[in-house]
Structure formats: structure tokens, C-alpha cells
Length: 308
Ligand SMILES: Cc1cc2nc3c(=O)[nH]c(=O)nc-3n(C[C@H](O)[C@H](O)[C@H](O)COP(=O)(O)O)c2cc1C
Image (cartoon, rainbow, N blue to C red; front, side, top):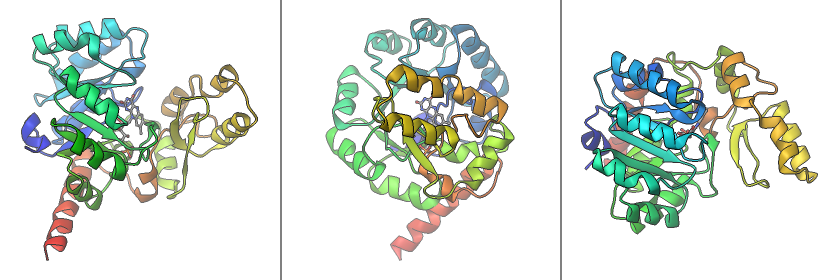
């Protein structure tokens, strides 16, 4: 079964839960455009998460979900908010949702963890996850080591539950490739930054349009907190210090509040402009509906070409 059939949506697309970016309003816009919108709880607290869920419900009658970052200090309270507000789809990142699984099941919540390895995917299947999102290192934001091309088929072979591909998907050819690797659908992040509805600062959007194929870099590989961002003065200085053996605390000075500076203030010099390697393909800002339509039409063209 494909993701669109599984979730009752028009396109087999999930919008990645992006902390500080994916508000209730943005998630509703994605859901109204035919994908699955997710509220990114990473940058929120339990009260603001509740407000965003209520806002999303006001703006759409289509399915939507919440992305819980499990390292968040208030995640226990956030999980309660998700249950109380009747959210039915949860994706999780940065850890294991094990301790919440019974409660999620009891309330009919579909749980879809993000994984970066086969071992983690198998663990999530044993815990009772409904599907997994296999996310490759091409992605924007926090990343693992494996590429989408190598990770997705290995996860598909290792688990019985459905697999959704994430990382490096921004057009119909890549969507077709994800299906060819055995995924039932895809999760998108970077290409949705370049949408009319995305609430990031205009300067952040312009940086996405400007960036070329090799315009991103991963900071924090040595410290064990790898994050893919667009190259700028901050990333250059970070990597210089990292190579010189700066400790975790020193490096944190660069990243503290840096995503918020990029998103809200448009600080493209010292801000953390999270984005994936597909930035080089993105040339214009479009409405979400058009991004989805164009990607799907490109997928159909690709499949027809392959068939011929
Ligand atoms: C700006 C940005 C912020 C992100 N923040 C989160 C997050 O808070 N939680 C999460 O699970 N994934 C996060 N991601 C990853 C996305 O959910 C998604 O899996 C990824 O962007 C897909 O790869 P792509 O960027 O190549 O499309 C983020 C990605 C971006 C670009």
C-alpha cells in the first residue's frame, strides 16, 4: 500500500517536522495542498505546541501530525499534549519513543520514527512502530552517515513495516528513485523551504535559491552532533575550530540560537541555515500545491520514460 492510501492523503508526501519552522499554520498549508503536514515540536514548549495543534485544526480538516524530538527536555509533557489534543500521527526523531508506545497505541496514534540505520529500524519495528522514515545524510538538519540510496533498500529488506524515504528528494526523478528503492512514499524538507507558505525569513529563502550543488556542509561530525547547513561564515569558523580540537562547549557557542537567528532574523552570516544537498536544484519559490503537482508530474514522466 502506498503512503497516500495509508494516511488518506492526496500525494505520497510527508512534510518533515522542522523545528522553529513547521508551525500549525504551515502544517495546515501542507495538508491542504495534499501532503501530510507535521507540526515541528522541536522548537516549542507544551503550551505553544497545544496552540499550534489547535491552529492547525482550525485551518484544515485534512490529516496532519506532530514531529516530537525525543531529546527535548519537555518531551514527556508534549507527548501528553499530543494525546489530549487527539493527534493521530506522530513522527519521532533523536531517540527511541519506546516509553510512549503503549499510550500511543491505546489512543490509536500512528507512530513513525525517523531512522538512520538498519539496526534502529529493526528496533522501532519491535517496539510496534507503524512505519519508519529512513533518512539519508543528504538531508537538511540533523543527519546520520548513510546515504538515502544505500540506506532505504537495506531498511526495506530488514523490516516488514512500510518504509518512507527522506533526504535528497526534490523532484519527480528522485521520487521515482525512492519508489524503485522500495519506499512507499517520501518525506520532504529542503524543497518546502522554498515555498510561498514557509514562514522562514526572506533572506533564508534567498540563500536556498543561491546555494549550488556543493553549497552545504555538515558541522558537528566530530562532536557527535552532525547537522547539515548551507555554508556561511559560521559554518567555516565552526569547522576550523572543530578541526583545531575545540571542545563541545566552545563549539556550542556557534550554534546556540543560530537556527532561530536564521529563521526569524534572516541572519545568513552567523545563523544556522539548515538545508539538504538538493539546494542546488531549487531555483524558485512556489506555492506548496505547485511543488507537489510538479513533483508528481515529473514522477509520472520518469516512470513513462523508464517504461518505454
Ligand atoms: C530546516 C530544517 C529543519 C529540520 N528540523 C527537523 C526536526 O526538527 N525534526 C526532524 O525530525 N527532522 C528535521 N529536519 C529533517 C526533515 O524532517 C526531513 O527529514 C529532511 O529535510 C528530508 O531531507 P531533504 O532536506 O533533503 O528534503 C529538518 C530539515 C530541515 C531542512
